[in-house]
Image (cartoon, rainbow, N blue to C red; front, side):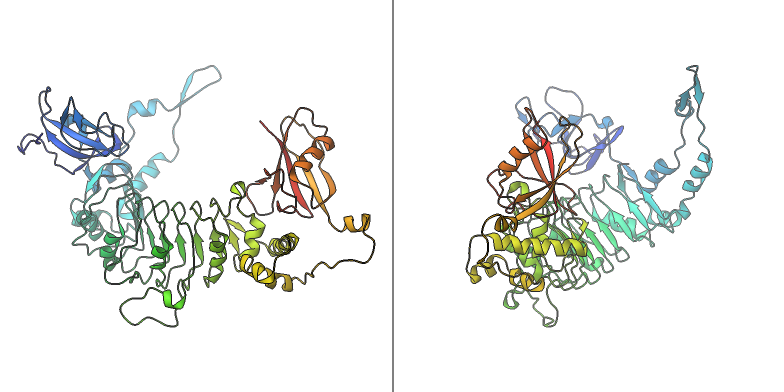
Length: 537
């Protein structure tokens, strides 16, 4: 069915962003304006961002528009929808709206005799007076207030001459011209948050973003092609946040690498759909880039490019510049990395000292991944791992423990060890660890004693009760299943099946030891390890 073409019938237009009157968080996009068969008057068809609708654009067998989801759309009377307010109107709503007498009467506490005692906020008038002096405001937070337009840029400049930070999260902005107009009226603005505003794909006429140092475009449906158009206007940008935009590719324009962004220090691409590390390598020539956030993507493997694999621009490349030369922090948690070789490849990134790689199959011990101490040993330069600082003591203990773990494995030739454990030879020599040699001496208890490890067992199960920790010497070949049986005996556990967790220094959560057939050595347990004894629920 065709929508109404009479402009007098309704103020709404297709593609316009609106919110429900009285609920600025219920936001949607106009998909249809006109009559609905069987109902009188004019209607507006809206597809809601939160998918809280009643249908997909079809009612009683008549198709009015196509929604993305089965129940993300509904029809509303025009008076139930708002097209939003200007920036200065929102500012008045947020900072100059005084509480009503009814609201103040509701501010009370109950006395000992159960009588209401009104509460008066000391300093309330001073706070309201200070917030009301807009010319002194250094920052404004106008999230979810229905801002849909700029208003008069001259009036904005006159009202907010010193505003440096502006949060416009969750409003009705969609046109980049409106964003440019807002920035033109705020010459001191350096930080702008436009998260959860669905922005138009048409990026033209943008020339007033040159002072921005921080730009947040999370959940705005933006793609990298639009970023390429914007970058000439973002000459001073230092932080760029692009979370939740379903990005799959870094689509460049004139070459196969990203150019420009000469001041960009932090790029946040978390919660997107990037799977190919080759897309990330297109960022390798951003010379000031120090932090790259890639959590919650679909990355499966990581590598460092060889000299002949480097993506270069059509101009002359800087032969002395190494890819990601200044990158210090890389967050790759919650991806799909399965191979340990990807972890080893991080050693090739010249300045990388802060890494988050948790919640990947290769690094999650609960899914058969390697433990924290193995990660520390394999990553030579890392100082902060998964948000936790690595102390010199933890690094030394982890590297020695790792070397002994590799040495305890069935005999492998040297080339195979170098392939599977690139740092093994280096660490073994650095810590002066010698190969075990066959002994001509006693082979009884003395030989067994050399394979013993000292561990501490702590009960944490609620039904086990308070029991003092136990320190025991056990063969490193003891299986996890055997240790569970021993714990039942040590702590006299009746009808309680124990669960064992390895508590590691620097790790925020203990590691579940769930493979009953694995030896303590294979599970990463060594001398001075602490085992937490819990119970199955």
